Length: 223
Image (cartoon, rainbow, N blue to C red):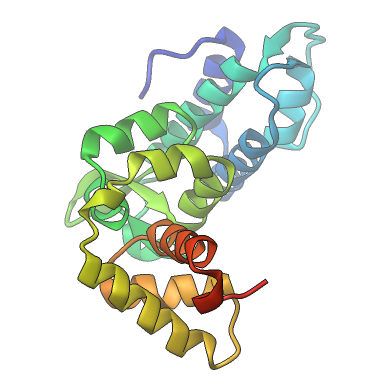
């Protein structure tokens, strides 16, 4: 369990839920905490009662007028999700959607595992799953998508786009053009091409947009 919470009452909430909340309730609270984290304005202050209610769906029994900074709340909610899921001993097979490891994300985004660690500090929500008999950090696919949607510039800077050779760029454009001809949109084209070539969706999306901007007469998705 993490010890580096910034807000004592959120750490206390973690302790209470891990000890006393039913398994189903803990899983639900992890999901609620992640949803709240994605909505926070890091520059704002929030009443702790609001944080408590959003996570537990109950009002706190004791009146707590404490205000917490959005940045600190986001930091602690990420730890809360990981700690609560750690207490569940969830097998990776029980996850309702694909689960990615740190190494998976490193390959998907063509970044180092240290970059993935930095992204976790910057809001990428992780959980803990039992995989092959031991606990491992994992990321729900929806958690990754949520982080990318809120941090496109950061993800784009982190990816090593320079590793794309000219042949690889050409293959991306050609595959995308064939896929787009079936009538699907940019997001779906990016997903399919990324899956086929083992690249991240953001790499494909960025490559296509860059190509269309530089070569409007040959654009895959003309304006």
